[in-house]
Length: 152
Length: 484
Image (cartoon, rainbow over all chains, first blue to last red; front, side):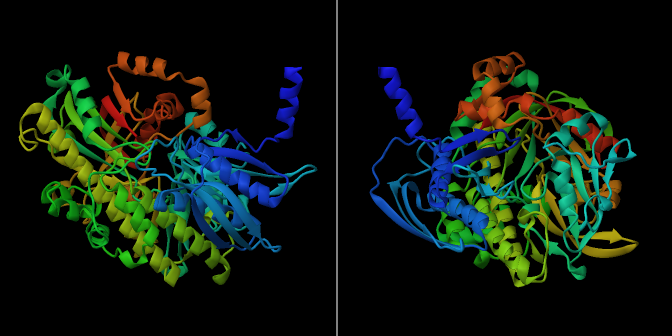
C-alpha cells in the first residue's frame, strides 16, 4: 500500500527540469504547463545549480521589470537579471510571482527570497550567464519546453 | 550536433570552410588543426560558429580558429576575427567573452626541483591558505568606488603603486599592465559592486595557480636569453576579471542585441550581437571592456604578489633574491586595436581574440626592448595532469592570423560526463603518483577540470608550432596546483 501511495505522489509532481550534456558549460531542459511556469522553473533550475538551499524562508522581496523583443530574449534577460541580482545584492530568489504581457515583450515580477552572501557561503557552480545557444521555447502536446545553456 | 559541412585541406595544419557554405558569409573560415584534432573539433559543431563569425560586417580576410577550438558563446573558443573600423567594421562582446581579459602570467624563480621536491606539500598548502580562490571568493582588498575607478584606469599600475609588485613587472606584460582608453563611466553600478568584492581573487572553474618545473627546452638560445633552465621552478597564474567582467559583458550584450535592428545587421546567431565600432554603443562597450581588462591585470598583479610573499614566508628570503621575476602576462579574451598589413597597406583593425593569444613576432615595436629580438612570450596553460608551454610569437602569425595563436588545451568532455565517470579520489591518487599535489575548495571542480576532459595540449601546441604561428621554447610540468 505504501508503494502505491509513493508512486501516485511522484506522478503528481511533474518533472520541472533535466540536466543534459554539453562540452564546456551546463545544458538544461526546462518544462512548464504555462509560459509563466516555464519561467519560474527556469529560475528554480538555475538556482538549484548555483546553491543547495534548504531554507524556505523568504523574508526579502525584490521587484524586477524587464523588456525584450521576443519571448526567447525575455527568458534570457529574466535569468541573467536574476544572476546579476544574486551576485550584486546577495539575494537568493525562492518564490516568484510574475506577469508576462500578451505580446511576450514585458515581464514584471515580485520575487521573495533570502539574504545570501555568495562570497561567504558555499556555492556549487559559478554560473556566468544564460546563453542563446539552441534556445527555442516550444509547445508540445502537454507543456512548454526549452533548452538552456548556462555559461559556466 | 556534429559538423557535417566542408573542411577543405589547405595544408597539413590549415582547413578551410569556403564562404559558399552558408549564404551571408563574407569571408572563408580557416581552422588551424591537424587530422587527429579534427575529429574532436567536428563533434561539438564548433566549425558552425567559425562560419557564423564570417557574417560580421567589416570582417577582414578570414574567420579564424585555433587548434584548441570548441563551442563557445557566439564565437567559438579559439576564435579570432579582425574587423575594419573604416569599412563598417563591428565589435562583438561575444568575440571577447564573459571573462574579459581572462589571461595568464608566468614568473620564474632561481629555485630547482631538487631544492623544493620535499617542500611541495608545504608550498601548496601555504599558497592555498594565502591566495583567495573558489567559487564566489572574496579577496582581502577592500576599495571604495573612487579607488575602484582608479583600478579600472590604471590596471596593474594601480597594484604596483599600492606596493603589490614593482614597476619592472609592468614592462613584462601585454599593454604594460593597463590598456589606455578605459572609461569607468561606461561601467554599470552593478559591475562596480561585484568587482569590489572580488579584487585579488583567483576565481573558479578553469582558473588556477600552478607551481611548475621546466622539463624540456626546445630553443636553447631563447631559453638562455630568458634565463631558463631544465629543472627550474616556475609559477603560472590563470585568472580573469571575475564578476565585474561578467556583468559588463551581460550589460553590453543586451545593449547590442537591441542595436542590431538599428544598424540593420543580420546575423545567424543573436550571440554575435555587435555594433559598428564608431557607434555610441560600441564606444561605450570598448570603454567598459578596457576597464574590465585593467581590473584583470590588477588582479593578476595582486595574485602574483601574494605568491611572492608566500615563497618569502617559506624560503625566508626576499622574492627578489629568489629571482621571482615576471616573464610575461598575456590576455586571451580581449579585443584590441592593432596595426596590421592588409593587401600591402597598414591598417588599424579591431582584433577579437576569444580564447586566443596575441603572438607578435621579433621586431614588433609593441614589444618591450628586452623581447624585441626574441618575439613576444606566449604562455599556454595545459591541464593539471599534463603540461604547459612557453612559446614566442612569429612574423608568420602577424601575416596569417593577425598575430594570434592558441590559448590552452580546449575541452573535449562535458562537466556532467566528467562528474559521472571520474572518481575524485582516484584522480587525486593518480596525480599524486605523477608527483602532482592539488588543492581546491571543491572536489567537483577537480573532477570537472580533470586532464582527460581536455584535448592534449601537446597536440594543440604542436599544430601552432608546425603552422609557424608560434615557436616552442619550453615545456613545463605541474608540481602543485591550487584551483578554485
